[in-house]
Length: 431
Image (cartoon, rainbow, N blue to C red; front, top):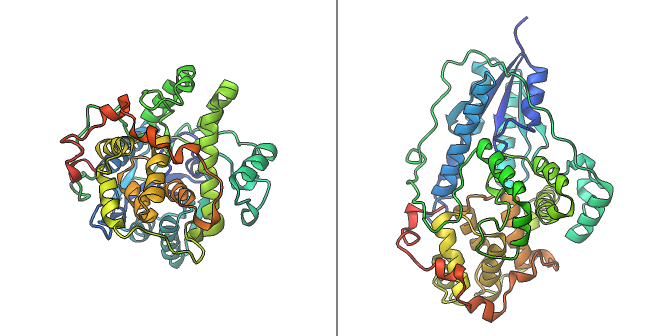
């Protein structure tokens, strides 16, 4: 009797710890075939001519995949790396290695679910099953106090009911060893140039350099919680390096799971409530996409009231040339590093939508290009929320619209992020 082989398709779950698809594959199969596929779709230019994934985020992803490969090798396994359309690559590898089933974590956003459906259809023609797992949220959808179709659209109601009636599951265990079939060609990690991008320039003004991968994610988590008291005290500051957990880049591609962070928070009682709230917002947006699909970010028969020169204003906003010190400083930081604080994201988004009257979807697309920690549901959900799409009346942050004197203040942050040759370098640094 031949060995049973399960292909584990890694996507936004680039970790060994608390990874149900990996653990289940080890338990259910004799051999496990871990695979990561770089899909050219995510690196092609958008309609604006800018890359869909910029250099900072692409570098972070490459580092994360390299770290996953190294960690898998430590468990006796290997990571297959390929460049191509997953609907071609996954079936080809499944046939080559006589795979019996394919495991992956289900996504919720439109583009990601389309790719899953294409892979599923291709595998079905081979009479192979693509098994879906849930692993991107703090609360498992099966543990919610309501079915997906009945999830409250109000975050306040969602939060109240979930925190009262649901529990966060424990993290799953880590395999002791992972057996793989004999691999003839594991594949090489692509370079940024092969993905059509240039090497980003690291700005010396940046408070943090983000190293991709589970190893760095665990280091950052332990660093944050070991200094939690300092981080909480500086939560309302804008320039402190410990201002926030800064775990979002690793959470965005699953180098660490929300459950891992949650259970670490539990050790610190109420001091971790701010971070727990951010994780809950993250869950909320994913569940909203699951419930509504694309309709969640599309207005009901509403036309945006745009300024006559909205395109010009959008470009000035992107370049940090609005003439408003705080807005411009935040955009210079974004362009030069691929990261800005959560608060500043709300401020610059609110300014684009409410003051400049520019197209919020183009602002969201710019964040998609630039942010290291881009996550479809959180990014587009947040922007739709700020834009008031579909009668959104709750404000995630009261600071989404700042008082004029706060926008104009010459703070240390504003002085730090004056224009420089680095953030003017455009494609050299863009994400």
